[in-house]
Amino acid sequence: MELWLPAEFLVGVALGSLVLNAIFHTMRCSGALDTEKQLSWVPTFVACVVLTLGSVPYVLLTLSQGLDVSKLVLTDAFSLVLLGGFLSYLIWDLVLGLIYYKSAITILTGYVHHVLYIGLALFSVTHGVSAVFCLMFYNELPTIILALGSLRKEWRSDLLFTTTFFCTRILLHSVFLYKFYWYSDVRFLWKLLLLVFPMHLYWFYGAVRLQVKRRWSKRLSQKLSSEFNASPEETDKLL
Image 1 (cartoon, rainbow, N blue to C red):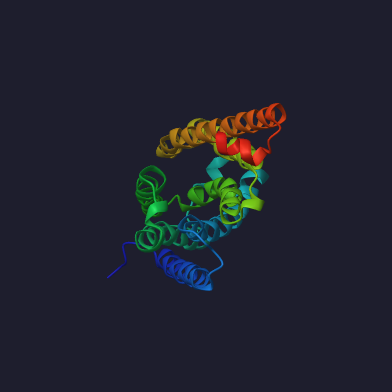
Image 2 (cartoon, helix red, strand yellow):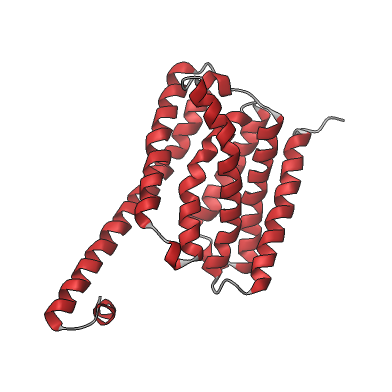
């Protein structure tokens, strides 16, 4: 009896589950993280580092071929293992979230996002385009920056996050959307890229809006501090 899902993919699921749980429970038991929100970023950080590094061979291949996306319409053992690891993250992030950081799981970025990408991952595996999916893992680069800032406040850089988000999930994603629309014979690929693009735009809008709000609050705080001879911390409480 043949497995519906490739063996390499199932190996990736198993390895991902083992690594994620080992690191997560080690961090949880160490007491190094104080809040549920910090704890919730541990699986995401681990997964995004692995996935971003795993996308490098496919990014380099695409660049070496002059962005000829037709060269990526394939399935290989590495992409199946990597995609299996991604699926394990999506599942375990929800499972661990329901147990340890329920307050940090939102409807859009948690349940909707994860269920959508579980479906896309399985679709990619069963339709022989797992390498294309793994190419798109370069999109996780800004998430690494966001995760670091969430784990440690002093590591936070809103400008760096927003800049890398625009370059990867807006600009480069648009380029690949154009390329797959015009130059790929597999017609559903550009539709998959288009499907997730509105979510990227929504998150980018939210990030820019938050930055503008914080910069305005900081300037107002400094102005009030100078006018009323109060410290920035005291004026922040008024805001």
